[in-house]
Image 1 (cartoon, helix red, strand yellow):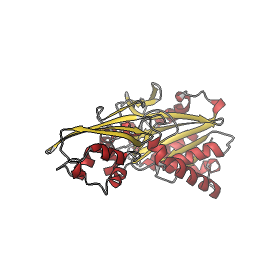
Image 2 (cartoon, helix red, strand yellow):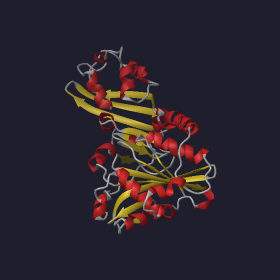
Image 3 (cartoon, one colour):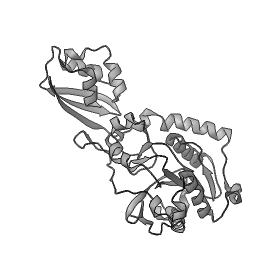
Image 4 (cartoon, one colour):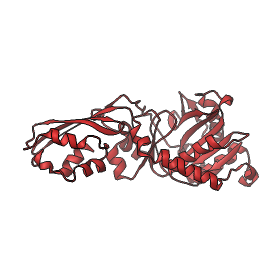
Length: 336
């Protein structure tokens, strides 16, 4: 088995690296990847991104959002989480057989004191009955990767804020994530491992998986990116994981309803959004305004359903002509 430890803390670049190594490099043994990233949300391939995240909270807290190639549910990660990925030939493992991939990790965690860790359900790893790892799988061109999370010391208080959106706000045909009860792994490790940083935990896990006491013993198994590799990864980063159309535009069609009562009336806005852009909008309510709101609706058609884009579309519009006494910022707050 070969391994590569990613230097980046950007989930988009790390996923691009994973995709590149899977598609472009032929290894004669399985490849193990480890990566750590700053605060981010990764939605599954088939999910409706806007349904899975609390966009306002995410924007305010600088949480990176991207979409992965594999299916499954949305996950939150920060520097307290370690990701791992196994890349193998497709004919060596049955697609969906997560246990065969993650069992070596579970065995290593047992050796580190987390003896109650176990594979459970479709794609989770539990400790003491609580979820600390979710896994997903993708196959293409004769290769398969199975990647997963290991929540060592994640800020759990962020999760319900970043991933919770009221159900009456967005209706979709997208796949909904199952919010499982989660925990951090750290308290379940043996005392000598409980103060490890995430990189230290990664290195310890590497040693356990390779059955060595010094990483120098497996230097010949470490992969090093070439300049050509880096160029290929940069292209995938730009074309896919940092591409708005991939992250948001590929969401299934959905209808958004935003309703709020202001001092000067109630606005009930109904949006039809296709490929992330507004295709139709109707404003209902008991507000006053000298102009017909269908004029406003026409100005918003084709605009991306993002606060900055809607705000830009309204820069030459006097909203007071449509919603008298309701400030533009309050209107945008209602929408986003």
